[in-house]
Length: 178
Image (tube, rainbow, N blue to C red; front, side, top):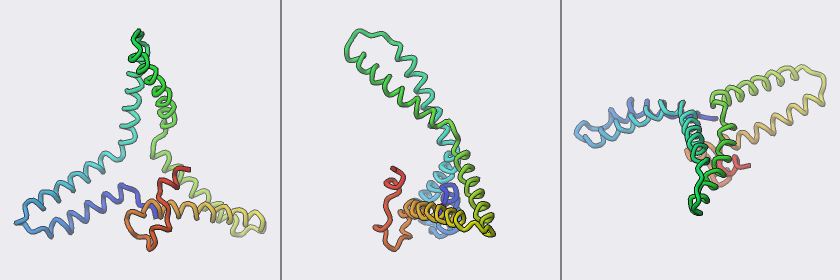
């Protein structure tokens, strides 16, 4: 059910260029211009999306280098000392965040795909197993995980208004919070 942003962006570009823009009357210059602007922005988003995480991580690294350099300042006045202390506190937190972000998004996606594949193989291996207890544990665990994942998939897509009862599906932020 998950539709990755890169797939969504490509679908929007195709819909705009193949259907919407050709339907705009040539006399409506403003609408044509704005439609082309939207297509251009979507192309830009498609190009930026694969590097955005690394871009943000790079900025955080450079900010940390600068914060480290500034933290060595020796000042006598209270306000700058307090600001430096706060900068040092924030730097410590940011270093932990940067360390936690060492992996690439593609690594995360590959790990998800690998675990899905392994779990499918496990299910296949238990299909002919006579170990009923173990087979039931596999089934119970996978159904519970699938139920939780389906709820998250539905919550992620909730803004697209596919849900017959949107109030029955929690917001994705609440599901991801804990």
